[in-house]
Image 1 (cartoon, rainbow, N blue to C red):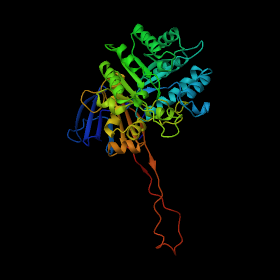
Image 2: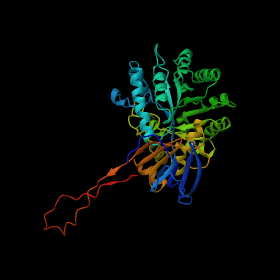
Image 3: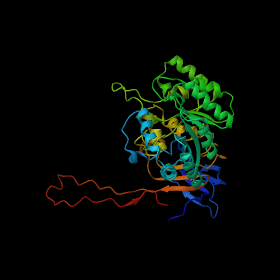
Image 4: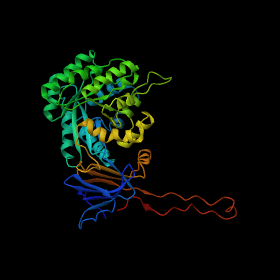
Length: 432
């Protein structure tokens, strides 16, 4: 039976948690009211129950660093493959002719892909565009944020370069953007531009999320960033931080100590940085990742995101937090628990969101995925999924698979005319 979404759910029944427990999770007013062993408490008459037998129940992913204004532009542009500088040049040329409507259409499509895969909160950077219409991207993303309210939470960051005047930043904030961002490490004077961007944030009383030290060599601005914002009472985070991955141990330790003292959240973006960094080193190519293990061991709050989705900065990407988690395992050498934490609870912490997941009193934000274990969920990333946002089912995906059965043994069938391979019975693997 089909249902119109969204719809309120009262009980998540028979779900498996990553620790192996099989539980019923009761929901009320968008929060988790109880978590009990499956079947231990009678189901109230008339309760709306979502049967999650065979599903792993995770805190819904949060995307801490997206670029919805750039998403899904690759096929429109066909830019050359290349590093960060070439991607920036390609994007600026394309961006000059974008309309508010065209930006909104791509952004909406990307956001809904993220939602279908389980992400219920997105922080998206939006460019402070060059020229006399710097707010086009912001206008588009504010529109999409308003359209999708109730299905997911979207927070926006003004991403301006060193060429962007203060007045353009201010105009984008006035449209309704929430935080200040930038990429000071790309400026001729990185520290001066960092201080300028942070001064705007302080003047406006808004949070900060800076693209920080996104290179394998060159400027290290993170320590200065940490020293300036120490004691601030707004959300502060740093994305990319690739340079940390190439620092010598002693210098790295000093930078991480500054980060820890200021409680800056660090956002790793493996897929984009694995693509963008290392083009100039064809032998023993260095990989573009921040110093994940050192940060975690020091107690720094770490998140991870998908970043770009099919644009000049990353021509691939599935808009799936489980893809990010898988890359953290293979490229970042994190374990399954650390990887999933970075895209769920860790991401929510860095974004300043309320705790969510299967604990009493937490916000009812969930991804239920067909899997027997956390490793299986990350490895296979089944498309069989249910997505819960504030206690409402906002997306469900069901997969049907038909696979040919193995042919009979050749020797036994040698003298018998062979029919076409039989098909296994059709099965809807996620039927209600």
